[in-house]
Image 1 (spheres, helix red, strand yellow):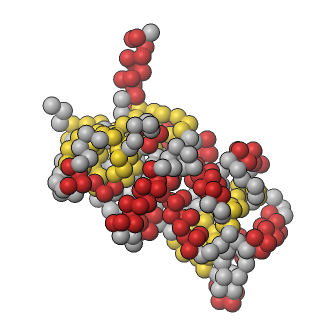
Image 2 (tube, rainbow, N blue to C red):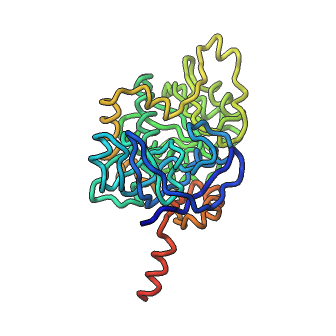
Image 3 (cartoon, rainbow, N blue to C red):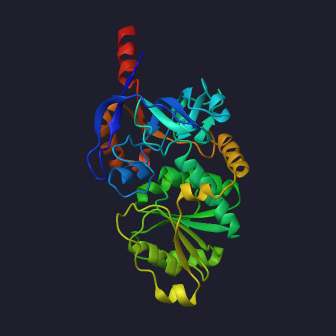
Length: 342
């Protein structure tokens, strides 16, 4: 019987993650043990590796917030019991995240999969898709007909275009390079502005005022946050959900905050979901399940074995808009078997 596993281990915030052989963990009450098939690298994972992301994990730990696999053991509880033997997508805030051959997750943080979706397709089911669904709820609560979004060429940005426009909310997409325009047009984007253009803020002001776009989802931070908010109508609100610029939010006008009723606040999916009751969470997961192969599908650019984690991490950092990098746990074994069959 296997008693140890390969895993990426982080000894402390900001330290280098290393491959280790560690004991297979035991699930506690309300938790399940999952044999992991695939786990994506997300910006939140990178932030966590650099000590710039809040989490309940204690150090040392196995990073990785989401993935897919098969439930092989239950720590106690009806929810976990019914999942044993089932293929699931999962979200993990436990000590043993998805960057190990086995992971611990709350039974309530698992989504049982239908037969028509592969484990690789399902591995990116939580972080981006649930964020987009939740952001649409926020936009609807504000009764806005259009939103502004930075880092629009990201996987989340492309999901947002499809899902928001399918639900009657237009997206004003902010990009950094003209090379990203065609990519977004293929997703259905009809408003695309390049933040590098000299007349960017003038164009932005015109379109946000015309469409009365009063909600802004910001993945970047930095000086651009305040500049975009200043161009938006009175009573607008900016939800900062990422910090890709690696800089503090800046350039926010005091006049905007005091006299134009504009606001800046954070958006953290984990906290947003905690405010929902069990019934609302179940409805959200049911909605998610029906969209994973359509509006909320994820493009995968590369898969690597867990032993090549560093290579996968570096590739993703340099090619984020191309698609996700998946960490696999039988990757090299599968490749060797294919070569033997040939």
